[in-house]
Image 1 (tube, helix red, strand yellow):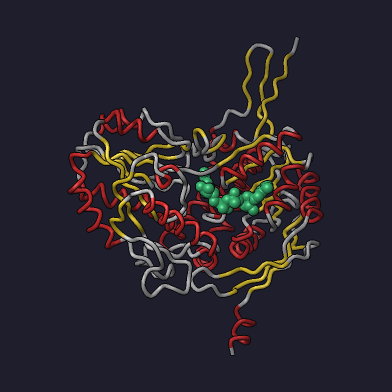
Image 2: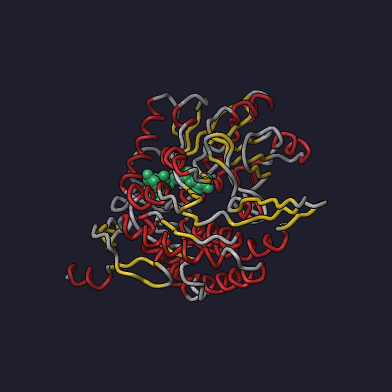
Length: 481
Ligand code: NAD
């Protein structure tokens, strides 16, 4: 019976999207896709090898010869078609993210929508960018950099694909996308959707495979001019190092250990739920997750009580249930990683306020962990310094505003930060001293025109809006005598 069910439900993917068509994989390795809610096999994917990748690069190179000369209006029309094509499959894209990744449905829907919005945001930015500037006998134009390799992480695959593709297309680049292999089923839905946008052949190519095979080929291949990468610091370093051999332009969107500074005038009934949403969004598997909550010593007692109360809303369970806030971790490996950090926190002397080690009761089959809050954390502890990429929040006490700023900046990361308080002027003053690519005041919020990216180990370069498009261009100056 089980075998029959398996046959009925297992999805099998054997093709890559190259030169406008789904082409059988040359690579022969088959990888199983495991559903994180119960550990069952739900898909089998034939992974690409170097030859598949080279074919995709060749197709993108052929397409670049024409597409790089497209007009602003032609690119804008393509972005609108991409938006329309992706919008038509929003429910399927969300469902695939819930099943394959275990993303909670409420948040998965937002991620998919924000990816789809990226096409229109890029169209708007495309209209605003000064593509040509002239003075005297000098003319400066922005030119597409060339074939771009776009490499994504598994925690918001649909968003990364749309965002990077939108910026590249607006700039006049053609692309080869290497999605996370853990996002193969979601990627397939996305590519089927984007195929309907009737793009010029070879503009969009998607090759599913391992990082050290397909990703490495993109990074080393001299026909690829630019790599836009979202993932871990370790792989980001390798991309930068290996890309240097062919002078790759790189954008690196890496990890974070984002601070949320609760100022002493904060209204806890609003500030604590906000802080928890930022810590536990996307089940804590979010680069921007606010995983260090900095609290004034004078208010520590009431903050702890407010956290215990508000954690009742941070429910864990079936990600398809719209009332659930935290789903499973993406894989057994990620489950073990998060558990090992919870153990480490306890060993280093932090105190578990909520949660702790092991599966939540009744959720032993999948990769679920307990949403966990530690108190008595000092900023030098491993759980305050390392990116856990799971639902684990560290509460750190501070004595003065200056000390809060110092602790917030005492991190190798600098991607995102939040300031919570009622005096807006003061919140702004604190925000202006934080080493982070984005700082939100009083709640998690987004603006597709605002840059996204990190200081320090959180990466190199920016995405979104005109900043994202500018990452795919070179300037050319023509000077007449
Ligand atoms: P990862 O670095 O393991 O993998 C990212 C991508 O790189 C995958 O597609 C992978 O196959 C590929 N890859 C692996 N080895 C490669 C190589 N040698 N050459 C080229 N590509 C290679 O990261 P992950 O586990 O998929 O994602 C989690 C990480 O991503 C976290 O650190 C998280 O903070 C970060 N992230 C950052 C942002 C951001 O916007 N800054 C957003 C989401 C996730």
